[in-house]
Image (cartoon, rainbow, N blue to C red):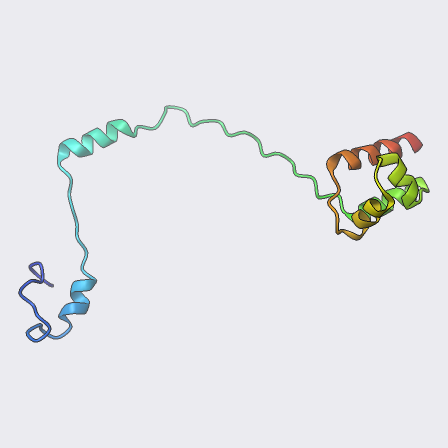
Length: 118
């Protein structure tokens, strides 16, 4: 075990493995009793653990394949979907290909149209 702060050792006079041992040494500090008591008082846990909120269900993302399947269930063309959603035909094509994000409001409008036909 090493003793001292290492000032007495020099590269020329250091015993074998002194520096690796010195660099791996650990320092332990014991706080005074008053500090330990103050920390215990400051970090007391509440009598009852806080209630966690239930995890929200996450729906899987609405994909272009879902859009196409819903469109086909309705018997609509891409142009019909574009007109119903107030979008361009190009935007609907991009959504079906997956190169444009499908906003939740578009999904809701299509689902509402599907419910109307069932």
